[in-house]
Image (cartoon, rainbow over all chains, first blue to last red; front, side, top):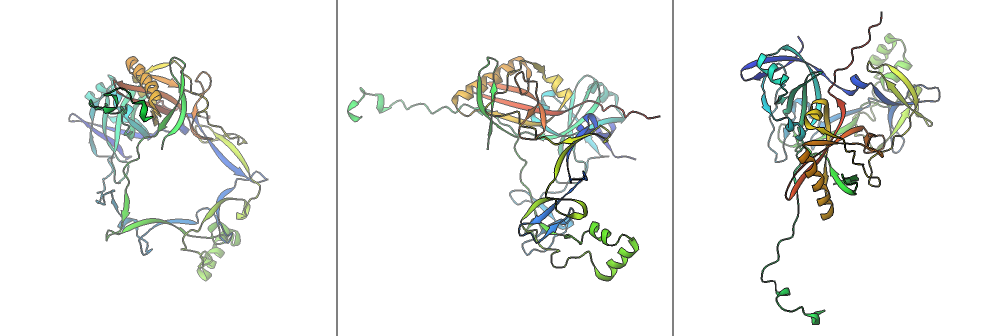
Length: 199
Length: 239
């Protein structure tokens, strides 16, 4: 059985199949290819600066190495934040109940959408169905696979269907007028007549 | 570091302003089991003549290839495998892995099923957003409700003032849009009908300008979208 998004809205559980929504499915796509004189497609390779090494596609391995240049396996890696604190892994949210809470529609303006899913209701609770039909926006969390971060997820409905938008906050801050501090009241410069002799 | 473009307000005054993308998420890094830092390294895995395609050319018969692999490890270039990747340049490889000295770039167009529909010479698409030509005030306002429900807002830029005058300029735009409770459709070209392209061959977007303002501050965000929240058409069924 395909994995699904499961939401808990006020104790009512709904389950949705999900299909990734992408430009290519909606509009088709474009790609740039490079061909030789006979029109045959070419591949990207790498040539060392001294010309001694020619590397065809797939010839470079990405590895994690420690300070002694010993390879560290992925399973042995730990992630730390800027302060050096270990970041715990979070599991996938698929097939797990994720609480949904209603938020104002404008909330989406403060997020950058990185993933869009078209949802296929497998079991849609009547309360959530009614709220979505009324135009409400819901927020939850999302992780497709195990990782180190839960992303924000929004669920909304339009005439085309029910959508899940996954994104992260923009972090934009208001810009304020930088006004110079008021001049002190006992500003000697303007106390007396202007002194042209100092010029 | 801010970049710049020029934009026009509702009174047809234009000005150069700065813009920045969203903040990057907090940096994370890897350590090993002992807590020592771990770095990402690019290592040579195979070299020309030792890669699978070259081995298959040399031994087209799978049985012969298997025997050769067992007998002499021809897939291993022991002098180079495991070395850190030196400074390299990108090259194009043609038939039999040879470097191409004259290559031709093509634009291949695919339909929604991934089938090729056309193929023509690739022509660079220039940016439509620049400091020299101001983006026009399209005058076309859309309710937040419509924008949020119809488009995936996949990129955002915050417009920033570069001096006291542009503070007032952007503050007034933000205030106007807040009062109208609508987003301004932003496009390039004389009438704002062309897509926004920020760099040569960059992604084209439709833009929606949103403003919030109070007495001494503002937030002006250009929301960018290249994707509608629209169900893809069902593929045509061939009899």
